[in-house]
Length: 356
Ligand code: SF4
Image 1 (cartoon, rainbow, N blue to C red):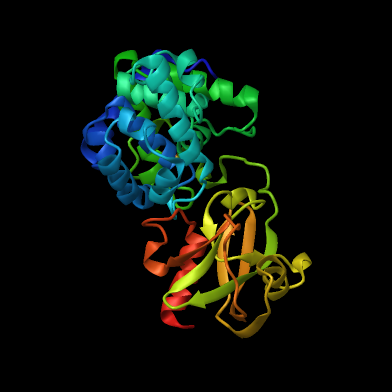
Image 2 (image 1 turned 180 degrees about the horizontal axis):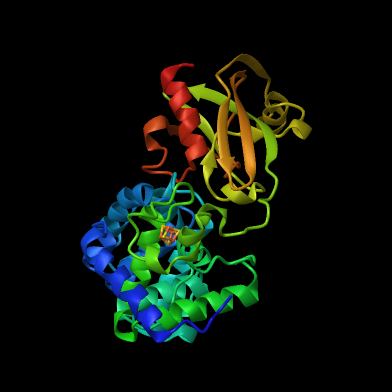
């Protein structure tokens, strides 16, 4: 990989890219008013999540918590409720923690220094660079999945771009292409190019503003880059969910021990080792529990796990939830509006509404 790109080549790439971005960029709510708090929330929500999915969550979140102060004063339950269905719930907790740190240590304003930004919960090198460049124009190049793909194709990079040393070189190259006074637009342009033109499959090389400088396009093999190691194998996880109804309310349990759903409310679950959901609940509730039917299996993916979840309709004897704080009753319409839940829980609720 030649890191000594010529000055005219660098200037040509950034000029073409910035010109393209000016006319082709999407109008996104956090772009219209890129103040640090808004950029911060958007960058956290956009991690591992598509732009279209994030937009309504971002708008609801900013309406409820328009400032760092408002967020810092919120309860975790409230923040998780607004995050319900967005996934990767650890992000929501870190954002809340981060708001408290920014309020206490930085007078409510996201710090402008890279080192100070990295001290805030939930902020890593990528997020720090993204917030500081987009909100403050600080010249830190960003390297997310989209930028990594664009660079790997332009350079026809033979190495794995996720390796630390390679990442560092890619960041240096992106930095050498970035006009220091246009860091915000340049970074967003690189990300936007990866999202709209240099897509993982079928990149639009003829319509790309940097195709003249792109080695992947020149060789006609852009899609072979980036060269990433094989993905982690997916793991199938089979679970049962217990549906216990009392009038229009359903029994819910706060997840503990399922690291990816920690703290969220869900229909009680049982793994195969628990001897069936009816046995697990009979033991916890201290009453007879009988299976009376099943709904269609719910399929759901969480990172590398592929869940197959069987909702089981259950009939129980009398029981009380007194002294059982991990359990409660809730109406379907409360899921995600009053109580924090995952999209897995919402999918089961849909099955119940449909009666299938
Ligand atoms: S020319 Fe093609 S491969 Fe190269 S950056 Fe543009 S879209 Fe990607």
